[in-house]
Each structure stands twice: as structure tokens, then as C-alpha cells.
Image 1 (cartoon, rainbow, N blue to C red):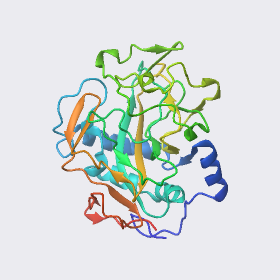
Image 2 (cartoon, rainbow, N blue to C red):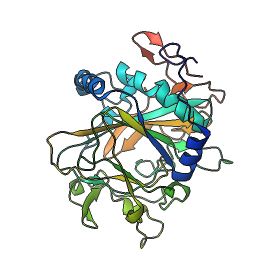
Image 3 (cartoon, one colour):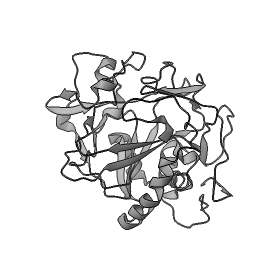
Image 4 (spheres, rainbow, N blue to C red):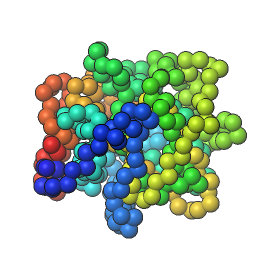
Length: 320
């Protein structure tokens, strides 16, 4: 089987039982990717590259308030290690098991959580218009699609324990959207770290996700929540429409929790069809240098822009 780094006989495709479990629960994993010592070595080499945003496609964005910096979105487009990561067969084979053979990666994001940081509030994402300043959907599935959303692969670049703020999922919640993404959320950078819900400090990077609820009196059933503890170097796969959140970082250690999320779609889905700029979390950046990365199969629809991303001068070859 061909992969993006060369030729391998290893097939990481999901089994029929795993696919059934994913459709039932909305997530599958965790899976091993890197040994912890290997990931730690990679992370030490990666940090100075992340600090240098000169080559980042959003490196000249407007000043951003709060914890989210658009300059560190989509760093797979300028950092070789991240470009290789999103196309690893351990990820791509499993995602293609769920989306079909023709798959693109449209976005990556870092999710750091420092000692004392609040947890991330419960949320779902279908078309990702909820935090876009233009209020336009960022992804558009064909009209006859049974579902929307995106497959998210969340990789633990550090340990992600409950105390350090690991993810939380409500299994099976991906079948019903409890939020209306056509509603407007108000960005308030001053609220970051100051919102408490049910005795837990939970926010959404300066937004209050409750403003999108279809029923203002509804609240998620946290008794069904499961904590997704990941070891350094592991990853987990889930639908963006799954109710998900994260614990606060309790500050019991000085170590930061760092997650890296890569988002995947079948090639028939349109990416940023109505936008020429990315507007989120108080920041704005041009999409002039943006492009999707084809990670598996081929693109026969020709409605998305792709980039010919290379690693160390070697063009990617999609995994089949």
C-alpha cells in the first residue's frame, strides 16, 4: 500500500467493528502514533519553528486578543513535520475508512492548555460558521448529504490527563445538533478564564457557546461524559458534531498540555466557498495563501483550491 512517505505493507484501516463503533459513539480511539520519547524529541525540535511565523500563511494577520492566534493555524502548510504528520498512514487509512478514498485535510489547529487555564465549554460544529466574522459556512456538504461536520483527528503532543485538561466526549451525541450556527456569538476577550458553569471554569476562547443553543433552557447531560485520557504520541478520531469539551488544567504540574487537531473531509465538500478571509476569535487573516492538502485518492470535483505541499522537497503522494 502506498503512503505519503514511501511504500509500506501496513494497513491501518478501521475494521468493520470499529467503523460500527464510530458511527454509534461518534469517536474511535485512542491509537498509538509515536512513542512518548520520540514525540518529546519531535516537540523540542518543533517549538522554535512554531515561534517563527514568517512563513506561516496567516503570519501577517491583524492583532489578536486572547489565547488564540491565527498565525498558528494551518502550520502544516509551512512546517515539514506537521505536513508529514497529517498524512501519516496511521491517520489517513483510518479517516478514509470513514469518509471514502478521496480525502482532503482543510485545517489544522494547536490547542495549548497552560497550568490554571479554564476548560473548553461543551460544543458541536457542523459548518463552522459560528465563530466566523462573516457568518458564512466554512464548509458546505452537498445538499443531499445525510450529515455535515468534519472528522477531527486530535493528537496529544504532550500527555493529556484529566488534571492537565484532556478532552471529554458525550458518546452518541453527534446525531443531534443542539446549537444553531446561524446565531451570533459575541466575542469578549475579557471573559477568558472568568466563566464558571456548574462549578467548573469553562469558556470558549472568549465566546459563550450557550448563545447558540436552540433551547436556552437545555444543558448537556454531563453524567454521560467520558474523559479521553491520551498518552503523549497518541491520537483520537471524532466527528466535530460530537458534543465535546475539555477539563480545566488543574495546575498540579508546570507542564503545558498541547493538542494538535487536523480536520478532514471528502473531496466533494466545499471549503471556504464564500470567504476570502478567515475571521475568528478577534483576528482576521487573508486566505490568499490557503489551500487544502489531498491526503488520499484524487479530487474530481475541482471546486477547492489545493496546495502541492512538499516535505523536504519531496511532493506528497496520496495514500490509496
